[in-house]
Amino acid sequence: MIKIKCNGKDCKVKENQSVMEIITDYNLNPKTVVVELNRNIIMYDDFESTLLQENDVIELINFVGGG
Amino acid sequence: MIKIEINGKVTTLKKSTQVKDIDNLSDKYNQENSIIYHNGYSANLVDTLEDGDKLMIIKKNMQPSIDELESLISARHTPFVYEKLKQSKVAIIGLGGLGSNIAISLARMGVGKLKLIDFDYVEPSNINRQQYFLDQLWMHKTDAIYETLKRINPFVNLEKTPIKITEENIVDVLEGYEVIIEAVDGAVTKSMIISSVLKFLKGSYIIGASGIAGLYDTSRFKYKTISDRAIIVGDFENEAKKGSGLMATRVAVAANIQANLAVKYILGESLND
Image (tube, rainbow over the protein chains, first blue to last red):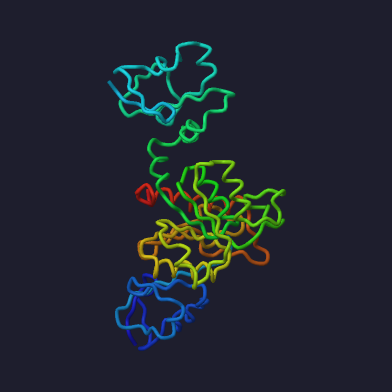
């Protein structure tokens, strides 16, 4: 397991967990989430290939419809 | 001597001139037929004018000249806000409940250039919350809002862009805009727009919305900032879905929070004050 910070909280995830997996762990739709990893924006196409590392700081901002 | 602006024109006056000394305003008839603003607020006739002051004298029931009109429109603005906004460019993506309200507020405030982006046309179900009229049904929203904005403030430079924003065209369409407002309906498009602007348009600031449906108290609206270049307004929960509609009152509040943040950003003010 590795330690990361997700949405401001400390949490543990398994090594080599992808951004895509953590989004689904949070029961979020990957198509409606904006992901900021260590202050960089990760685009949807890179969710599968971006793997989390020790001490990463990730923010998941979910969007809902209506406008 | 002091220099003040009267209806947008710089005028030199001697020191300790009072408001009533201008334009025969000591005359009762002139007083009764004028609306006078001094630095954005109702003038007191015996107030002394100071260097750099702005005075607006609006003659009742008269159509002002086109030269005067632009400064008279901003007579109730906080001084120098109009001048700064006039230099700014804002792009609005989506001209529905959020975007049509945002466009109208920003045109009233005097933003110099507005880029109006929407692929859709006006249909009857829009009327409950969007700033369109029944005689505009089936017009492109870009054409309908253009018509309305020109009636409100003809001094705003408007660009109509009747297309759908995609990952492929977003950079080309929004390049060069210091402020971008995300006002679309769909959650997938919202997140694509925010991510793309943050990733590829490093010179732009974006203001989005998420969670504006229903009639929940507007004090539930909060802000989330992302990467110092995005701010999102909404309750982040209440989506438009079966049984939960989009209502004029709550949508317009969210829209004007977005518009207010845009103006504050342009003026260089702290967004939290």
